[in-house]
Image 1 (tube, one colour):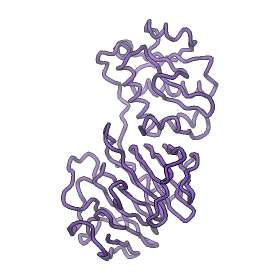
Image 2 (spheres, rainbow, N blue to C red):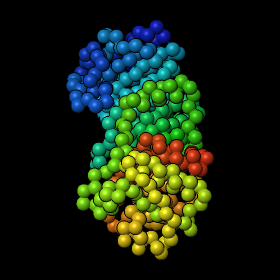
Image 3 (tube, rainbow, N blue to C red):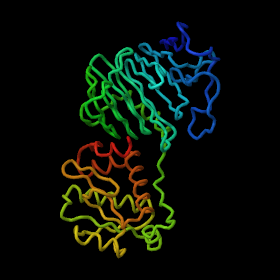
Image 4 (cartoon, helix red, strand yellow):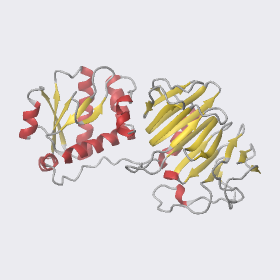
Length: 367
């Protein structure tokens, strides 16, 4: 392990205690730190320091290896980059992290606040990125990522995890109780026992807000484009008519749910460049309307379909099609983008006047 300390004056001094791996060469700003790059990176360093105290890293700074520690003092500030998913992190003053302390932990957050962003989306079937947090090297919580922009604050009181886009699953390192899903606009607090609380509104200090904002440009983007119809009868009908018809179960829709449905349908129509039509239906009439093509989707509290709304009270809502796999896939992709991007947060707050709970979506992003 080696320790790198960022000093007030903006210089870096390192003490080689037990360097992990081969000696690293002088760090440069690696091409794989930048979104859209296809370069995987080369050499032994698993990370490189790319910015220090607001300026480019001096040529004398070295790349960081697995097992290295990086700490900032009272006025220190450093950005570093991981090859894994082109992750960029912004570490503010009085903070410390350990890079890849084990094969199962990519970063360990040991003190202070560090914010990070992933620049590439998680590939289906690939193993998730797992992080750890707790004072020093004591791991009290485990963090599993799904393309987020997030911050972690560690103190003697515990660990605070907040998210602006994407999702982080937070669990006690001991393995129980049920993990908490932290999504856009929310945070969880884990005490010294590592057990995370239910999510609340993410209230980051101004310095952390600025850090997260600076990282947002590295995050995946979500175009919300209209899907290609392919062989889907539903999408062919939507494309031909330039209208998307959504029925909703009027007996289950509260005023808040209906407000959300209207906003959701409007955003779907804008994103797909079609006119949205929202129609009240009943549980008995919905299957017939879907089969006849008079509605393209039905929003209802069923056990099947694409989960798209988890209200503050009552059963979750899903988008159902007439057994059209193409339309199901299009709905799932759209809802995933709405959730990851933070648009769901905006729609939910506008209708329910509070931040959402993402618990119901845990099975969608963390399987």
